[in-house]
Length: 181
Image (cartoon, rainbow, N blue to C red):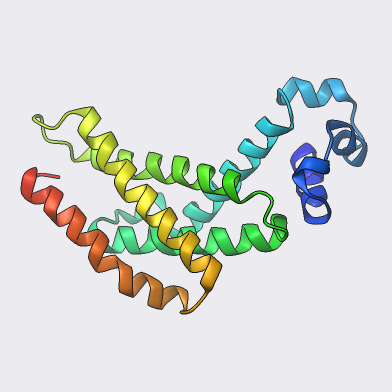
């Protein structure tokens, strides 16, 4: 109820203008209930963005699909594009949450990519190296999607088709340095 009330308010008001009082009144709850779940509205924003992103990823990249390589990266890019469009349309029409959305997407995507890399990690590759690779890939995807979102000069599919070879060459280069990645 708290999260739905918050999302309803985000559709109507800028984040800066929303108070905890607004959220709990809309949800029909008291402030103590809110603070039992969230420290403040910023924590609620982070949790909301993370949940929306996780839902999008789950719908585009099913856990049991056993995807890897180009198909995995393609689906991750499509998921980020879809999330960016839908979240902007539903919650960020005035673009006041762009930074929060970007940070949430990078953090969530980094976790997914790191998990995939970690599953295939050879003994000579350190956790730090995997984290760096996951950062490069996740930030690249989010950056490409943000640039696309601002311009919308091509379809999502065209964007992915155009940029996927570059990301895959980065991954191939990393595979050449560490063949078992």
